[in-house]
Image: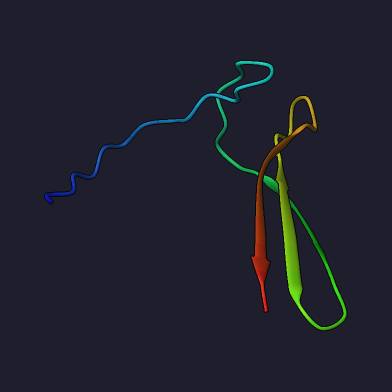
Length: 51
């Protein structure tokens, strides 16, 4: 599979604002939890969980 790099600015699926940065909330004692939020509407756009 071929990958291609494009210089685009993603759109928030909730408020449809152009997203140039994300808010990251970190937490967890034994594992690493990260929640990514839109800076405009502050709704969750992604979650990452690492043990």
